[in-house]
Structures are given as C-alpha cells and as structure tokens.
Image (cartoon, rainbow, N blue to C red; front, side, top):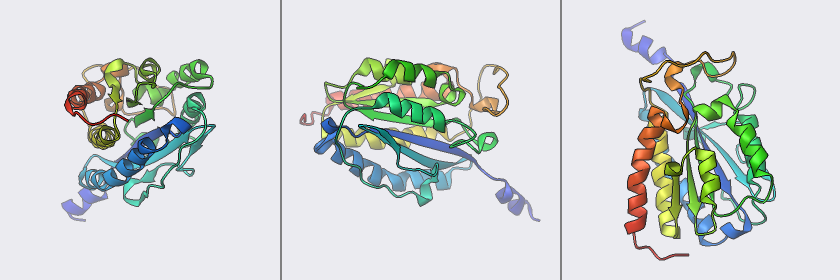
Length: 257
C-alpha cells in the first residue's frame, strides 16, 4: 500500500450539526419562509466544507418543535452530502422543553452519537421567536447534565421582539451566543452565516489549553474535543465571530417583520 493510500484509508471523524427549529404558529409567513430558504441554500456550502475538511465529515440532524417536538432526521444524523431539506410549516405552540428532552435522548452513544470515539463534540443551532409554552426549567436542567451537551458549541437566534433571549441564553450558556434578528432578510443571512461558521469551527481539531477531567465510559473520549462551557476555545472563537454578526444585524437597515 502506498503512503497516499494509507492516508486515504484513515477514516475522518464526524461532527453533527443539530438544527432545533421553532415551528410554532408565530413563525408563520416570512419567518418560516426565511428558515426554509436559508437552510436549503446553505447546504451546498456545508457540503463543500465537509468534502474539503481533512478533520471531519459533517452530519446533519434536525428537529422541529411546535405542539410537540419531532425529529426530521428520524433515523439519526445524515451526512451532509446526502441530506435534503424538507420544508417545514408553522402552527401550534412552542414545546421547547420537549425539544430539549428529545435532544437529550439523542445526545447519547445509544442513539445519535453512536460514533462516539470517532466524533468531535457536536454543534447545536437553536432558532425560536417566542416563549416556551411547556416545562422549560426541568428540561433545560436535565439537558445541561448531558456530557455531550456540555461539550457542544451552541448558538441561538432570537427571532423578533417576542423571543425570550434570557431563556435562549440559558440554553447556549451566555448571552454572547444569542443573536437577535428583526427581519426576514437578516434571519436568512444569520442562518447561513451561523451554519457555515459553526460547521467550520466545530469540525476542526484544536489544541485545548487545559487538562480534561476523566470522562465516564461511553462518553466523549478525545480530550481535544472537550469544552468547559461557553469559555472553550471553539465556543470563544464562535462568540467572537457572532459579535461581528450582531454589528452587521444592527447596521443592516432591513425592514422589520
């Protein structure tokens, strides 16, 4: 076997990009239209990132929540090269707590994270325009205890004035990781921006500047992929870029909803 063949035979790790999408009734019209269009349009860029990335293959998992929470990728994460976006509609309430419980179940080596040894910590992207209508508090506490969630890099988009930014900051770990948008045009831009940036950052190896604690069997095994909350190297790198995105949103001058 040649050296090139040996290098090609080394499997890449995987990195799962989770989309958690509020599809409640208040997301109707231009909001859900912008979400559908942006995810569909950004997929070719994500495919290019995955194809050219020597570190990791990007996979997609998507969950929508309204009256209930349902996985759009019911059989687990799908390699981005094979992923096709199915348009979602908007109606009903905002079952964010149930969405967190579904995410908690998925962040397990028994379900969506079966490639644990060969995986980077996931990236999780939450979009919502409202207030949770179910049991948020107990659900977020259960999710925060999940080792995969602790290690993930996280970002949320607060869509419009009614979005509860404090709740979203509880999810991401800091208000720095919450973007606020007030127009369909900016929502579309931010979805594309965040999807690309989080995929680039999360799917690359970094040298962690601290010693990781011992991880229980079946959880994350690569200390280079561990984070210490929102202050991890990868989360810090993302937050820095989100600051620039926030300035762009403020200065865009797009019409509001």
